[in-house]
Every structure is written in structure tokens, then in C-alpha cells.
Length: 326
Image (cartoon, rainbow, N blue to C red; front, side):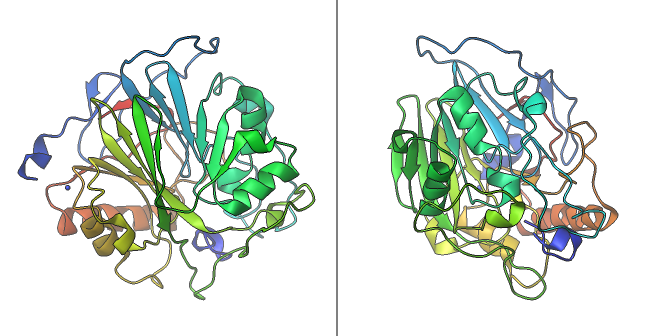
């Protein structure tokens, strides 16, 4: 989550043989693959079966994960509204405008939604998606109360805080307590929590950070993948996770010390590292992902740092809506 100052508002010797493919094609190191078609709308599955696992990046920290006939979403933010964050001035009073025309063709189904934190560029579209699909929303107590504020039933909301291991049969999700990044002033944008349901949010400032989580997705017979939503880490909470893949939010300020060394060591140096939250998420969801000049520099520095810190890790820079298989 960049700071108010533009973008700043906001593992094993076999590692080098880890297979990463996109739409069946081998993906080069630190090279985006060709975009795969967006999934077409389909009826919700009536039976569960195992099948291929695909990961599609939706920009920012958002992911669609298809596990056979089941879909898990992480921080699905598709509306990509213009707040002036990338062009200035940043408008904290920007109305929360859900782009159903963008969401509906991409979100035909969802079983669960995992929310890392409740800033607008992570949570804003979640209530609509939950209402559309009937998905259960997992997040902090703030996410729970915000869900109620949007009219979601409590039976569709699950508050978690880290340490929980949730069993879904063919996959599990471990919730990990984490931290939000800080801007150059050592502050977090829109700080705060919601301990009771507030009025329905109207502007981006009505969606506070609300504490931050990470999620470890383990797929039976498939990969284990760790998702971050912000560029800070409580590395003691990562002990024993050792994921195959880590979706790592790009650092946006130097006020968080040793972010990548602590994160990668805590995760036991994943086989594949995927940078996220590097794009201009206030533009259309079209490839190649747009990257602001200063963020391009940060992305290049991040890739170089990962190669230096964890030389056996592959770095995969994702493109939007590409089906990656780990």
C-alpha cells in the first residue's frame, strides 16, 4: 500500500529446477509470460474434484486461484478506481465506486475470499464479490465488521487473526499474523481498526488498514504458496511455513529495515518469488502491466535483491490474468 507521497503511500538445492509455467509455456526468470484468456462465466460447481491448480494475478496483491472446480480469491481488487495516487493530487475523499462491468466477467464463482487488510485497493470490491458468489470472507475483525456494514450476513464472514489452519479438504489455508508497510514518515496510511460495525463506507478513507495478515495456501498434491498484501513482515510468525512460492509485495520505502532478507529467510528461501503490488493499479487491467518510473526502479532493485539474498530462487514477474502453474 503506497504512502501519501505517490506510490510510497502505500526455499533446497533443487530450487533451480522448480517448474513455473504460464498457460503451459515455461516462464523465464524475471520475465513475464504471455497472457492467458480470462476465464469465462460458468455455473457454480455441484461436485468437488481434484484438477489442475492455476494462479492468475489481478494486479496489486490480488489473485484468483482455481483448484479444480473451486476458486479462492486473495485481495480481489478489480475496480482500480482513480484516486490521483499515481497522478496527483491524492484525493482521500474519492468515492468507493465498484466497477461491476469489470468484476462480473472475471468473477463467475468463488468459494473463499482471503483479505490481507482492508485498505480500499485490497477490500473495496470484496463485499460485492461475496454477495455475487456467496463466498465466505476471511479477514481481520475489522474486515468482519466492515462486511457487516456492507450488509453481508455474519454467517458469510469469518474473523481470523493468525495461527488458524483452515481445512478445505483438497487444500488448506494457514493464517499468518503480519504487518503493513510504513511510508517515509514511518506511518501507515489510513490507520485504525473497526471493533463494531461502522456506517457503510463511502470513501476510500473509510476503509482503514485494520491490521494485516498473510496466508499460506497448501494444495494437496500441489504447491504451497504464501501471499503477502503489504511490504513488512513479522518473521517469527513464518517459522516452519517454508512455501514453494511466495507472492511478495514490493517495498515502497526504506523505513522498514531488512524487509526482504527477513522475509525470505523467514520463509526458508522459496523456490519461486513473485513480485506483486508493483503496478499502477489505477489503470485498466491490460498487459503489459503499467509501472510508474520510480516503481520500475524499485522493481528492478527488488529483483536484484532477491537474486542476491536467495540465489536459488527463481523470480517470476507476473502479468495480469496469466494462468501460472507451480
